[in-house]
Length: 102
Figure 1: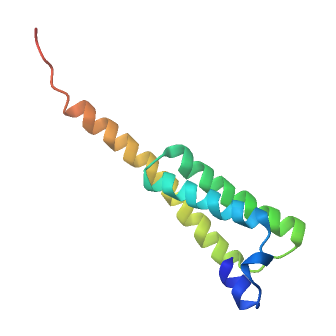
Figure 2 (figure 1 turned 180 degrees about the vertical axis):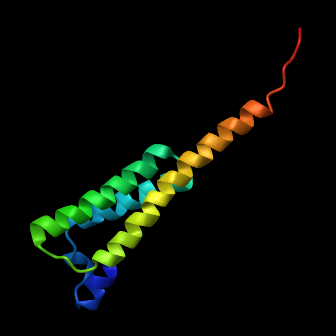
């Protein structure tokens, strides 16, 4: 988004406040995925897909659909990865638990 602002000759002062909220939200959700939080991964995927659908419906801008599909695919794979990580981590903890007798 910021690349488009600079490419069009604009400045950071011309960026809408909602774009800044969008950037901060995406960064926070990305950090959550980095920390392997399932809620962050699902929210990031849904936020991206709903945002793209919103732009397509209300602005009529259908450019970049193949790129959007690729990003959506990788966001979805991220969701699958986080859930697989937690499933495997839970299985590993159960297998390595030590039974102590008293």
